[in-house]
Length: 350
Image (cartoon, rainbow, N blue to C red; front, side, top):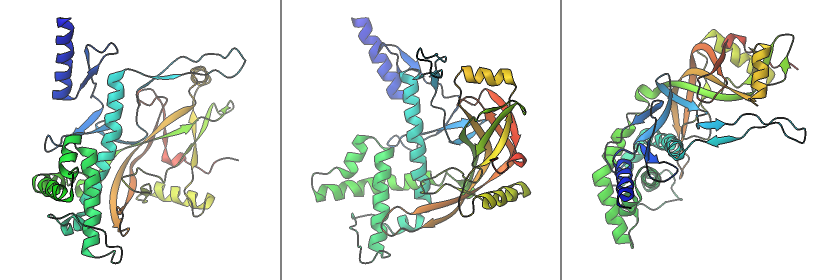
C-alpha cells in the first residue's frame, strides 16, 4: 500500500513540475508526452500557461491537426454493408496532449488579437473597471471596456482558476477593483510583451493542412479526383479565413479559375491524384476515405476592424511559398501518397 502511494505521489509531482506526463490507464505509472511534433511557446511567468502548437517540418501547423487517433482495421458488416472501421484515442497522455493543442491554438489567437488591439489597450483604464457606453461607441470609456473585456477572456484562458479568481472573483465591487488593479500592475505588461512575439514582422510561415475526400477511382487514368480550396487560408481569431493574395502567376491563375467557375464566392478546384490500382484497393480495404493536403504558406496581417463594443475583427492574407501540394493518407503526415503542383488545379469536371 505504501509503495503504491509513493508511485502516485511521484506521478503527481512530475505532472505538476513538467506538465509532460499523465497517468497510465491503471492510474499509477506516469506516461511521458511525446512533444517531438510540438512547438512550445514558453509563458513569461508561472501565472500563465505555455502555448502548445503542432508542427510540421519544424514550422507551425495550421488547419487540420493530428488528433493521434488509432484506426482499427476495416471490418466487413455481416449485413452486407460497406466495410467500416472505428477510430480510438490512444491513451490518457495523448488525450491530454490534444487538449493542450486545442487550448494552445485558442490562446495564441487571443494573444495575436491583443497585439493588434494596441491602441485599445493603450486607452484602457488601468485603475478602474470600465462600464460600456453604448451612446458613444467610439469614446474612450467604450474602448477601455472592449480592452478590459478581452483581457478578462484572455486571463480566463491563459491562467489558473486561482489567478483568475484573484483578479476577477471578488465578493464585492471594492474587492474586484483591487483584484483588477493588482493583476494589471503585476501582469499586464508581461502579457503585452508576450503578445508581440507572435507575428513578428506581421507575418508567420507555416504549413496549412486541409482534408479532402477521395472520389470514385478512375481506372482509365489510375487515380482519384480530389477537391481543394486553394483560396482559403488559416483563421486567427476572426470570422473569416485568411484570403489568398496572388504573388505568382500560378496564384493569379487560381484566382481567375475560381472567379470563372464561382463568381463572388470561394469554392474548390480539382486536381488528379495518381494512385496505382493496388494502392487504391489497399486504401479502400483500410476504409481510408479522405486524404490530407499540405501547402507551405506565409500568412500576413492586414488590418483590424473595430466592431464597436465587441472584439475587433482581424484580417489576414496569405500566399504560397512554393507550388507543391503534398498529399498524405494519414493525419500524422507520415504516409505520403504523392505531390501535386498548384499548376495542376483546374475547374472540377462535370
